[in-house]
Length: 278
Image (cartoon, rainbow, N blue to C red):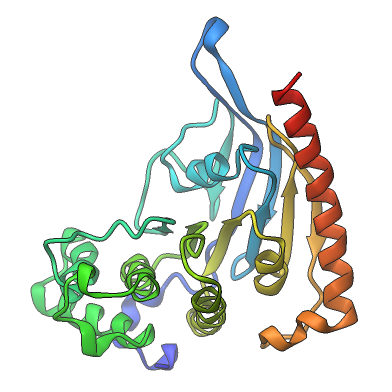
């Protein structure tokens, strides 16, 4: 892996130490009148710069909706989202987004996909190409720059997605169940790779998942949401040493926090099921 401190274009690293997220009294409702649907209740969250935070909750609790509000794709019905003290009103290059579906441009090569963001931001072809090569090397795919997305495995495509999201040097990386479509072994490898990238890049990560083991393995903190309409009901600090490996899954400290999160999610999932069948 490439040492992030050796990256070229140091002027783009002015965001080091940035990425503090504040979600203040945010609720999100879709529709109006009788057809209105409240996706999230009033929510307050503070995420410090450089933290790795997972949002965990039962299906349909508003995890992705909350993430999209931080990204600027969804406007809060009440309250505000701030990144480094500035209110989020629309998507911006300070927030990179990685989706579950790879969302790569199929007619562009891997290299072109990663260079696309810097080009749209006004950088020259040479600068954009250098950035693309830098981040493709970071995710271990520089040799595949001339390939098209369809020629890559699912795990490789998602690594391209991560490289593309990082190519604008965001202070915040938002990830919506990015490994959900991968097989178990590839998923474990991607989790370890992501932690390595996060350690080197230093960006704030907000990672949505429904997988308790994934959340406990990755996060500094796990924010657990209630059944819909979602709200944060627990903020669980994961005091496990870093760097982490999958071997720690059998350690007592890991098992204890995993069991706590699992029990909480199970209770909320039961509430969701009962409300849907009432």
